[in-house]
Length: 119
Length: 109
Image (cartoon, rainbow over all chains, first blue to last red):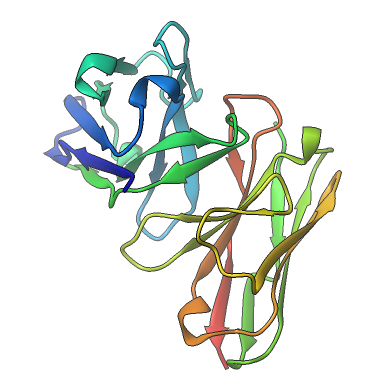
C-alpha cells in the first residue's frame, strides 16, 4: 500500500522557521517526482514546490520562492520542506504528493500536516 | 498561468441522480493533462480521473471524465451517499506548475 506520511507541522511565530518531512512507503521513492501542495483553512489547493526524481531540479511557487527549500533523501525515502521567514498567510495544511502518470497529475496518500503561523 | 474555473460552485442532488461538474480553462490544457479530485473534510484530495478521461486505480466506474482543450467535465452516473464532497480540477500543462480550480461542492438535496 502506498503511504506518504507528513510530519513536522506546528505553531510558529511570524518570521520563524519549520521543517516538514514526508516519509514514503509502498513505492520505489527514487523513481517519482514529488510535490508539496498546501490548503489554507477553508480554502482551495495551492501548489508550493516540486522536485525531480534525483533531486537535481527543484521548482517553487512565486509565493514561497526564496523562503522555502525543498529537498529529498532517496536513501531514506523521505521528502523535506524547510520553511523560513514564515508569514501568517503560510498557515495551511501541507500535503506531499507523488507524480502520477508521468507527472500529468499528482497522488495524495497522507493526511497532511498543519502549519499555523501566528503571534 | 492557466486559470481553471469550476461550475457550479454548489450542486444539490439526491442519491441516485446524475452529477455533471464543469471545469473551464483560460487557455488550452496541453495534452489534456487535466485531473479531477474528491476531497472530504479532514482528508487529503483523492485522485479520481487523470489525463481528462482515465480513471485512477480503484476508482468506481460511475466516475467518468471527458473533454479536451479548454472544457472538461466530470460525470458521476448515479450518486452514492459517499460521493457528496468537494471536487477540484487540476491542470499540469507544463510540469511542474499546477493550478487548481476553486472547487465544486456536491451536497445532498
